[in-house]
Length: 152
Image 1 (cartoon, rainbow, N blue to C red):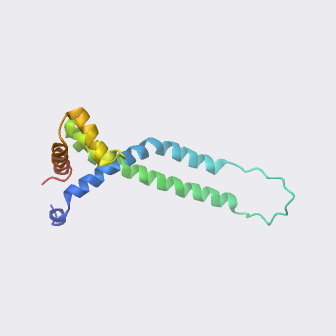
Image 2 (image 1 turned 120 degrees about the vertical axis):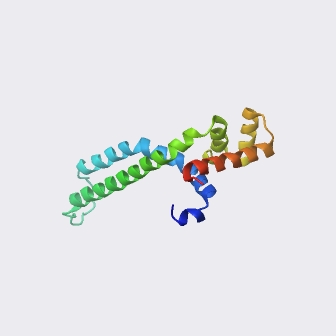
Image 3 (image 1 turned 30 degrees about the horizontal axis):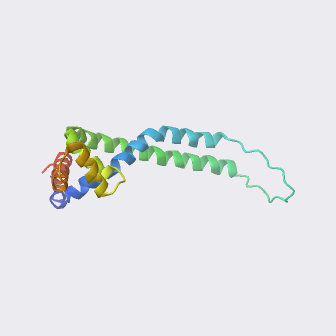
């Protein structure tokens, strides 16, 4: 273990990793379609438009530039997909080790785009605990997630 791990704020890092979970799932689900769209852009031939306006000299390299731009876009999408897979390989085992109540608490506080008051109300409706207990359990769940992700 390197000395940097001692100074890492593991709780904040775990919260940030949890907040990225939905984005990573989205990337994994939609990247194949985005890559297919980018490949389609490479092979589409644009038709000439008829208008009364005089035209300037067309770019003789427009097709090459369009293909190069699509290749660059595909490279970016594939790198983003690789990082999302790496994230899921790292995060998902820790997430699955959490109990159902811990997962529910963390989803309510960090994954859903709702206010903390609404999160506490949802927690009360499901777990029948008071506001202070909800916050205490949230802190314990975050600490447990941080321990699973980063160790001591």
